[in-house]
Length: 402
Ligand SMILES: *Cc1c(COP(=O)(O)O)cnc(C)c1O
Image (tube, rainbow, N blue to C red; front, side, top):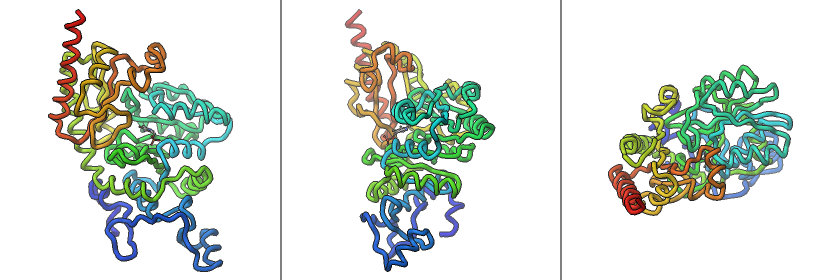
């Protein structure tokens, strides 16, 4: 299929990365093997020297893994990709490959929690410092850059604020300062946003979320732009060892076939739900990249094709209302994670961030009535009626307590 490069995104999702295999299967077989036989000592030697094409050991490369990697690299418009055992393994590998002791990172304050912790704990042990800024304000990024800044690390839309960062503006700051722009594109997926087109040097994903899309795999990936970077990253991943296995690669690659369909449906449902929430009397505010009320709505239009499936909103009646909603939803699943076909709902103040205490939460922007919704691909009326039913319980409790 020589015309693969020119395919539209929805066709790419179905065909990208699929090669030719013995017996002509239409999907890449699962090469569930840790190691590969050499034909002779000379053959083994030529593989190790990189002169012959082929496989040696699955931590280094594997045909099933490579098929999935090629698919994601193609969707992101990158040179090649490196499959990892989790999103965190991908982020750790990328940072370890790019940074040296004494280097500095500027990161969005709205990054995934464990990413911030990785920077603050593991990376700082090795002499790497990080300044966290509100990256939706480009001046804050520019002002935080130091002579030793080597990486600008952005998540857009951010978590859980859904703040949007202007990738082109930030990539210019990175270029002017000899730093690399790394973008976590998990919330959008390459179907909706391709950061490399907007100047990113490296893209990372938790494939646990939209890319796989079925809440049954933990996996991650790094996408790079050129051969030199790829070789360096591949060596680093081989040394750190956080690789993905063939079976999970197969599952992710299968999930990607419906990625365009799913992202369309996630966005279509989320737009309707966000508009409904915005007019609901129990709601104080709604953050969704597809609402005109979103502070960076215009920047979003420049860099993503649709607003995606993630919504954050604040309940007027705070912590108690959040608990009531969590305990009364029946259709939406009460769980962390996101990006699967089923709608997930989460109230950080009473769940993931309860142990932090109210003051620390407020300082981190996690308000008492904040709810995060990962909108699934179900019928939108079913999602709305479940939320409506759960919201109606708040009103009753309020009446009782008055
Ligand atoms: C989940 C997530 C990660 C971490 O991925 P894992 O697969 O859980 O290791 C990183 N970034 C974002 C934005 C995420 O949502």
